[in-house]
Length: 301
Image 1 (cartoon, rainbow, N blue to C red):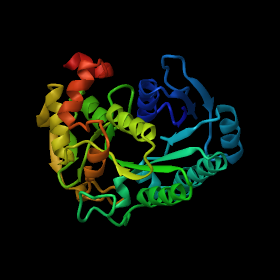
Image 2: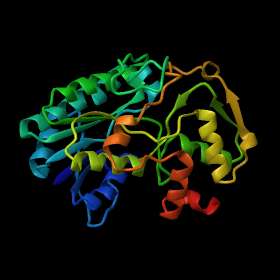
Image 3: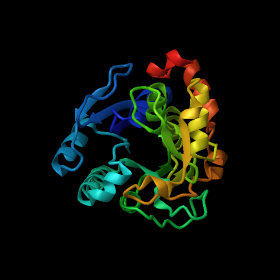
Image 4: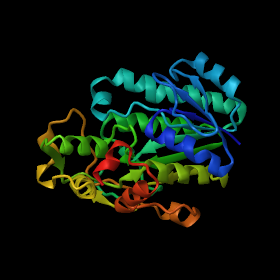
């Protein structure tokens, strides 16, 4: 199985590249601004601007993948709201370019989506619930899902609040860095979701591919918690000053994009069909420490 990971320099892409050999996948990766993460055996990687259809086609011609995971996206939720054209170019047109390349080759297209396709009024959500995005990022991800459904061999994997501690920029790492610097951090108590450890997500995705699963799956950590609870868990794990965490309402943050508040996803389908155990936050942190995957934060444990 030749697996092409688009966005191999990101936190999920890196985790996929690392996990692939465990499933006897030959991983290849793409990057846009910096080379893909190193791997063993050495990773074959390609520069790719996925908004350029000709460049996408060229990479697919060279890589000849059996499966492709689109782990790259414009994920700045407020940025998507203020620059809708850029969001559409990357998350919609870029997705279409990759999907068309997969379709021409009967290559499995794995599209990574989000709980932001839902409105956050009655979460956690199952795969059968009707999407209703309330911000532009969510709308672009829903459009991406529709594009993916047009590829005969497709998988849509919805996830949320993905975190890792190795050179990644996400809610957990920004939080830890600011607390370590002695800064006060405003954290919403009314945004509920399911934090997901990138290596755990990568393992589940690889199993879905290996087991020839198709359709839509919710793959998230098993904890359903608000952002403040997540922040407390991270702060306590690293023995950081939790007094610097200030609980606020989302409305107090005056963000450009609306957030789905009662979100998160049900994982009944994934639990039933997969052997991969989806981890809670504390379990993920413990495993990251055990496997030496805390990066520069390891010194605080």
